[in-house]
Image (cartoon, rainbow, N blue to C red; front, top):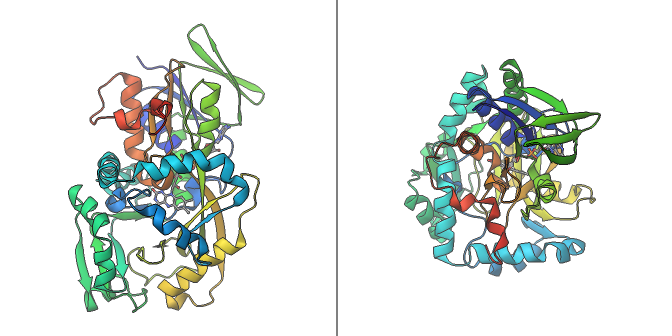
Length: 419
Ligand SMILES: Cc1cc2nc3c(=O)[nH]c(=O)nc-3n(C[C@H](O)[C@H](O)[C@H](O)COP(=O)(O)OP(=O)(O)OC[C@H]3O[C@@H](n4cnc5c(N)ncnc54)[C@H](O)[C@@H]3O)c2cc1C
């Protein structure tokens, strides 16, 4: 039976879920701290990648051996502020364990695969439906390497991609140059993923999706969620001066979902993996397809407003301001990958990826609170994963069997000592 559903969170996950539920006949209210597309949300500043190749988990066998090298390298992709270490140590241990063996990493890759497989096509359909087809570009993606030896050193990652049906072709010489004319000639080999795509303006996409949702009858309410109470089979949510009564609640509040889960008696251990982007203030129309150089650990994406480079993982306390040094590293890496950028003026941004310790999202019903669902914990993959997440949540609320095995995403799995 259609009912009234409140979604906490107006990022890419909350909005796509709202559109799906509204299309199935539910009354939907979205509660968001800020307007959809806000700079404060992770959904604003991501790299825009819609990559089937992202099945490779962040936690992989032997990763811990690379950590000291990353931490000591002043241009490295990882930093851990000492003051945050005691709080996140259990998460880090679980994270390291999650992909510690090839078998475990394979299991994560297989569980990520359904979200990524046809994500570019799903987003293209969605963008066309909302009247903004230009926001999703299906030109493919390129992972370049300096030489064949570097590509072969990534053999495990490519074996995970092969096992999960990812297609790619290797480009060299002229073919590589014409796929990405802006890329440094120091890269001599590239794996081209034809089924990948990108979003050309992630913040604008969320805002456009929200405008479409409003036209379809979704109600937006700008407020921070306050007290929650169950009364007579309904949930009563305090939202600023208003109280919202609803049959079901979907918690899709990005990083804050972990805190909100505690109000419903659940435990979802989310940690902020802070990331940075820099973006040139003018576009580079001749750049070519997005690239993710294997050595630099940044994604470089041609956006509507400029060329964006995104990357870095920083573990830091919430109160700590964005680090200029981290943004500078991304900028330096961009100059290495795309020498033509030179000293072009750039804007910079920091956002928090909502990350679980096992690299998988938390999608499903609460163990404790009837009528409460979670759609969160997407870490590095929230944009690409949003359409399938929305569909799974809508299936669960409607009592339809989801088309895939959803057990790996069970929000209740974190009760076990090691996930
Ligand atoms: C540098 C970087 C690069 C990335 N690149 C990619 C990429 O290329 N591809 C990809 O798929 N993913 C990428 N990601 C990850 C992706 O951006 C995130 O996984 C995704 O945006 C998470 O979306 P979300 O809707 O869960 O959270 P958010 O976008 O953070 O939205 C959270 C929402 O919850 C609301 N909220 C929070 N607390 C409350 C509260 N108490 N009350 C009411 N509302 C509340 C906020 O207002 C907001 O609307 C990247 C992330 C970063 C940082």
